[in-house]
Image 1 (cartoon, rainbow, N blue to C red):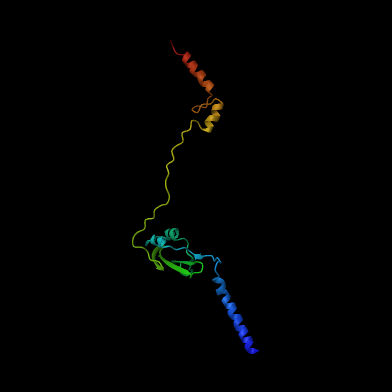
Image 2: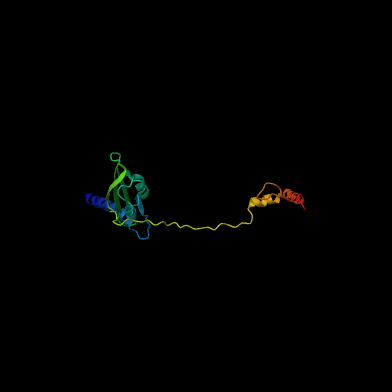
Length: 170
């Protein structure tokens, strides 16, 4: 009786332990990719230069993942990625500052020797000026007899022109 209870408990414990292994490797089951931390790429590290201030580094790298209370001049960036059914890939980068200037870095990345010139993905388009006969405001004021140059009605202009022509000496 004792032997059968021992074998039953051994078999039960093995099946419970192997459930996670079996369930994780079932064919046709979708598992999501898990990304945690700051995404760190080599192109970002290549843009870092000595004596950059903290604001410039913050623009390139983003805010650090860990803020050390005891070392304010050290920023730590961590990135962890676990694609479905694959091993976890973890990357780490520490930046060191002195007097708010970047003085060094340490971790899984090394800066490139060639300066990086980041090209802009933006394009400039010259839009030609629209040639409109009249604007909406000019059309509305034209209905009431006002010209765009003066605020006097058109009927008054014609009268003043005729009166000035009549006063000319012959």
